[in-house]
Image 1 (cartoon, rainbow, N blue to C red):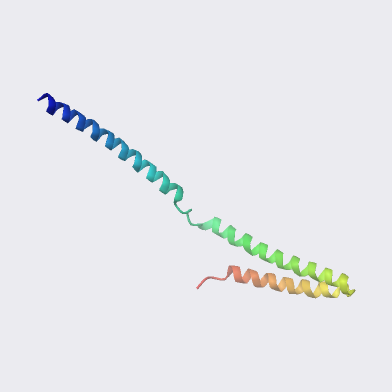
Image 2 (image 1 turned 135 degrees about the vertical axis):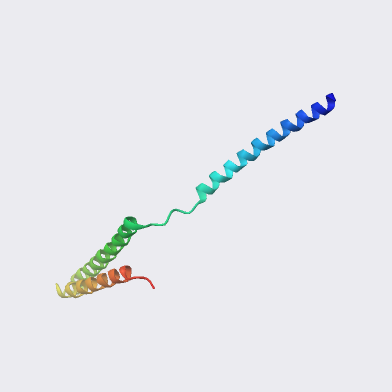
Length: 107
């Protein structure tokens, strides 16, 4: 019976080590899944701020682009201030179009 008791003790020790290893592997898998999980969706205020800042930057970019291009063309062609006024107006129109495009509801 000594051999049977020895085998049972070895089997119990092996089972305990296997359980410990399984627990460590499960914990490692859970940590990996937590790291690889996609970020939570933007909702509420965060989403509104994101859309608002995007619309603002689109508007300012279009206006600045139209104004700077018009100013430089005026300097180059000697038509001061007419091209700057026209292209600044086009930049403002493009800026408002960009705001509309960004803010319109999606189908």
